[in-house]
Image (cartoon, rainbow, N blue to C red; front, side, top):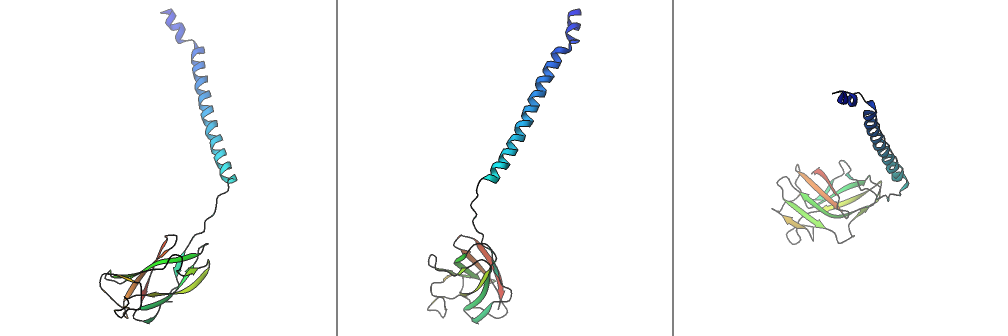
Length: 167
């Protein structure tokens, strides 16, 4: 019994274990700090290529309807890169839509901080429409006074921008 009491009161063994645990904790904390510092430092030293952003917006109340199959709107590019229109969809309230796709790279291009007038045509050529190359999904329609239409623009970078206009 005296031998057991002797081991229970011996503080040297417990101090050694606590010292080892304390060293492990210090090493782990130090390694986390070094990792955080090095990734932050390396992150600022590495050169990151900057790619511009496109940000197309419809200029409010700029939609002008020249006839029942053509609408011109001013589109503003608030981004930092040129935006080239690839495809557009014009949808009516019933879900019918016309789609037009420009030839590769042939769509209108809007420079950063600039706006241009883009004409959105609907209709199918030969059926009284003014859009040669448009594809119709659903029933044919024309721009009618008092009705709202949604225009979806897709750029060559595959970014999508939407606006609504009422004739």
